[in-house]
Image (cartoon, rainbow, N blue to C red):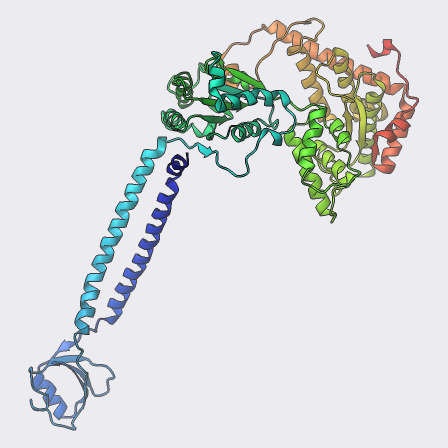
Length: 623
């Protein structure tokens, strides 16, 4: 196992050597450049050559300043000059005085003869550049060879191999998801004790698909499987298979599965498999599309495992509805593990896990926080814990107080406060009426959620927030519950209309109207909750945009008109119900508005106290 892992990771040494050779090449270039500069500046200037007899004649006549004797070469400096301007040569074996020069007529400087150093210096200057150039050519050849090897490794898998980490994650580190962990525990046992299952004729599952909303811990559970199984774990993202060149992804798939077979028993984990596993035959890209070629290779590899290889493919996605049916059939992904949003009990366990290593005060109530965070994923809860720690540090506290936890929860759920933006008195009053309208309608209607907080301080993109939290987790919702939610959404716009008049309503309700329209259309199209179209659904997968473009709609224009009419009727009814509630509770609306202008933020207890005595309108006024 260790030798295999070393061999798989040996590419880093090649990069190190390549970088070292590049450094040597740069140094060699600097040396060559220095030698060229030295040779250029060390070359004697071009002097004209004169006969020796003329040198003797000029010297004896007093026209020369200096004669420098360098071996047989004479450098001549005339009167008034500081540097030699000519050169000449004397006879070998005799001095210039013996050849006619009179003593005392000119200054004579005799340079000592070197013992051969000049020759070796000239030789070095001549040979060294050739050696350096040859060395640079060798480096260039090596670099080209390395690039060729990289080109050949273009189709190699980029999966990362895990298995010997010190800080392994196990199922004990994953809070909640007990059913999912039980399903995956069997995968671990398959890898650890294959004979236990083969003895009763059970086949090891080839693939396990983890499906769930974003942030629910799919990747974390896959890492826990690797930690529990204590087996090699190849991890890769679906997008890492796909390249612009057709066939590269398929080559990487083949290489990945070949490595897995050499390291069996092991696990292959493909995160976000929908990047390559989307349904084929969409009409775009053709049969030679790179993504489809990659998917075809995955299908072949998963269905072509040799018996006894003990290789299991784990894959994670939050869009299982767009996956190709051939990928989901038994024999490829034999198991599907659904990882849902945590319930209240699991949320408390997750919060305890994330606060375990943080200093928290005794007044922090994680049970209450778990009750408030219905619909939050594990990633949301981790973010709340981190934000609470950041707020405590910002306030120079050594421990996390309950107010830090509450502020962190609100920051994550509805956005940070924007106290720096000052509203005018008129805008502040308008916002107070608007938020009070939401609160009154939501409080009075019996199937609406409970008011948690009302504020006219801007949070995120909104001018104010009326926050409703369900008292318990819900799996199902009725038509009347949805209708109460729609009326609650329109409560702000209707309150503006009743106070200022129908022509004075503002853009503050834009987000409310958009969400109300989306909910109403979902009721009709996906849930079959219309009057004329009761128990009929017209679902169109929003993720399959290409299918929307190339496939015909599955219902007629008349039905589309009916859907639009049903949505309009739901919105009109919601406005009518909100108007009926507010008309009989205008006094409470004014009281809540005044309290908001005074305090800016009201907690649930304060809102409930103000709205005590609010009345429910007669049923005839609601419908």
